[in-house]
Amino acid sequence: MTNRELRYIQEAIRAEALDGWLFCNFHHRDMLSDTILHIARGSANSRTWVYAVPARGEPLKIVHTIEAEILAELPGSQRIYLSREDFIVALRALAHKVWGVHSSETLPSISYLDAGTAGAFEKAGLILGSAGGLIQRFKSLLDGRGMETHEKAAHALYEIVGIAWERVKKGYKDRETLYEGDIRDVMLGELERRSLVTDHPPIVGAGVNSGNPHYDFSGSGAALKEGDPLQFDIWAKENQENAVYADISWAGVFGASPSPHIEQVFADLVKVREETYRFIETELEAGRSLSGNQVDIKARELLIRLGYGSEIKHRTGHGIDTECHGSGVNMDSVEFPDSRLLLEGSCFSLEPGVYFSDFGLRTEIDVYILNGRPVVSGKERQFALLVCR
Image (cartoon, rainbow, N blue to C red; front, side, top):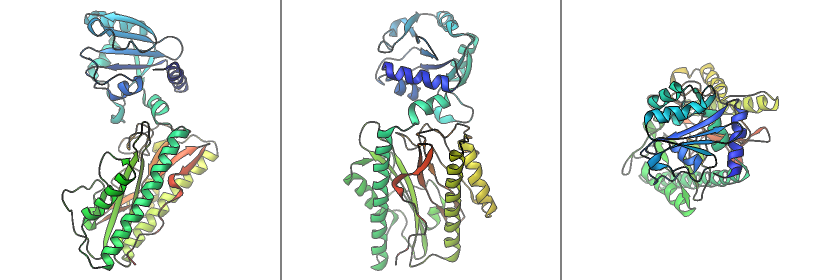
């Protein structure tokens, strides 16, 4: 960790009104601690270590005598322990202060602290709070370089969707038997050609499969049939260190025109997406703080008002950073309620969707906050279903 990173961590601690940020690990179970502190995953970690960063002043390292060098590259003073009692005694130097730890009742994606270790901290007199806000501030707020890589990925994904849909149109025009796998292969080929990387192949769901938000298949998948709704979901990033993902979803119909029902459903989703975006824009321009759960509540209210209450299967959006589902604020009031705020540099998806027994649709854009305003990544979004004419 550099002195600059330490200063940024301490600024984040003060911004979150905590006394400090408490990192710890055992057998490298806490990926976030290792990542933020640059701890090598291959280093020996058979004993618990603690790194306590106060809001001001010098950090404290607590390490076991046989692994005393594991935090050697980090600034701060060091205490070495041997026994469990030694460990508790060392922790008492941190007592009566509120420490942000990697735990949250509602955000399992950041909850690495086990109950036993948390109990040891509390036994030593530490007061525990969640480091969720700290993690967002340190890891998930995009700087200029992050926004640049995110935008490049977004532009590329929009191009790939266009190329994939041309393949769909050609297959339809030529009366070719097309499979979901044929279209996914086009997308994967375009990702490879652009040197983009992803943690999972794109989703291509036709007909009833479009009603499964996390649909996957092996082999060729299902054949596309006349009138099938077709859902694309693709996410990727540049193949370079600290590159930021983009994640978009587009929808179409394998036919010359959609049915009136499918067309109306998609039009309603676009309306909800745009009204939710304008809600974010209005609140931020007015200088009001806005949390992820507030955004989700707004989108859900709009969907329910349009009659889709029983067809909602997922949150409105998720944080995006160097991971597609990142550590930043989620647009979520139901699954993993997220009270963290949309801050300068926050990046997230907006993806309202509804799912019936025979099909489902969603429309997904990415948004980031720049100069206090929401910006749509790639400057593009879908307003009408793709068709094959």
